[in-house]
Image (cartoon, each protein chain N blue to C red):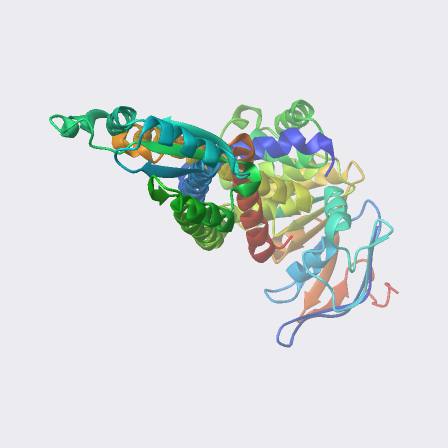
Amino acid sequence: MIQLYRVSKVYPPNYPALTDIRLQIDKGEFVFLNGPSGAGKTTLLKLLFRAEEAVEGQIIVSGRNITRLHGAGLSKFRREIGLVFQDFKLIPYMTVLENVALAAEVVGTSRRESNRKAFNLLRELGLKDRYDALPPVLSGGEQQRVAIARALVNQPALVLADEPTGNLDPEMADEIMRLFLRIHQQQTTIVIATHDTRLLQQFNLRVVSLQRGCIVGDSKFPEGGGEE
Amino acid sequence: MSLTYVPFVLRRVLLSLRDLLWTHVLTCGTMAMTLFVFGGFLLLQENLHRLFHGWGQQLQIFVYLEEGLKPSDLATLQKTVQAYPEVEGIRFVSKKEALESFRRDLGAQSGVLEGLEKNLLPSSLEISLKKEYRQRTKVEELASRLKGIKGIGVVEYPQEWIEKLSLLLIAVQWAKWIFGGFLFVASLLIVGSTVKLAIISRKDEIEIMQLVGASNGMIKAPFVIEGMIQGLSGASLALLLLWFLLIFLGARLPSSLGILMPQGQLYYLDPWQILSLLLLGWSLGALGTLFSLRKFLTV
């Protein structure tokens, strides 16, 4: 599903954010990217949805080399993945339903069909009574569930989440994690960047550890050297 | 961007027009003022052109006759003048007719003629010229010949100052392009700033749209359409203001000015000029937006 081969990223003027990253994530896997602040988790995730461009190496997602993807190709690629962020990234003056339906409309689904799909998802995620509310009146957990609904509305094979529980209390964080596990059961590949070690201990899943821009551990390959 | 996205883009335009109404109104007003000034010059040019053209068409030589000319001498004189190849026609204007005509031209101010003697104005001949002889040198040549005829006092012809006034028309034309061009650039900058404001106020929305896979076209098209709407609305407003200006000036034009205006009325822009002004507004909005998008929006 995802292959990174000798990927490096340097921020100007000369700050190495990632160095020589080699990583393979198979279809249907659930992976945590873990590490302290500044380890390169978010940068790695940004490379995976091409918000940043690698200075070296190759990134293959779903069989497509996205390392230098631009313009229409990039838009098309983004429509095939679901993104979730710590700060939710919801449009505050659009209702919950409109926020979710927006992602469906962007891929060319009619407004009526987009609304129908968005409403069904919101119902599944326990937000059917909040569909016409504006995001600022929702709790953090509710906002994150809306963001997850938006990420799922086009039924992507890959969901990338950057610190999705970072703004939530532990109870709400667990609820959001259980939601991700439900999504994962439908063979969706999930990559979550988090610094929350409590989550890693609670859910026994693959953990790729980063430090100072390098991969320093992978629970799938405890002896190292597993990804070539 | 395929046609399936048209409803989506139009909805985004409507939302923006609603959310940033006053910013749009301000830009539209600025464009209206620019196009009003440009259209004003166009209107002035159009009316001067028609006026001078009208005068040129009516070009005549006025020959004022000496006092005491006998009817037989007058008939001979008319015959002689009519025989000139340049002359298309002659009209004799008696002293009485001259006074009546003057009284009509003065309109409401004609009271000043009351009490004056009826033979105040001399009798005259109005000589109209064939088209091919309506040039300054040829008119001058004929005038000097006429001056030599016995019984003719003064010879007048308006050609020289019509030509001088035509220079005014050229000046108006230049002023239109210089002022219009300057204001056009200023408007482009203002439209650009408005779009910049719109981009800043919708920065998060644009980022989110990019993240969910909206294409460049889907993100930029609403801005460009908004610019076009602003431009067209500005141009329409300018045309309306020009129309009111014309009505205002028409109502306040002193009737005595009718002497100078053979058609006796002011003219509005012709359909092509109206269309040009609308297109100018449209392109002003679209270009200003495109420049700004290029500069401030990286997608």
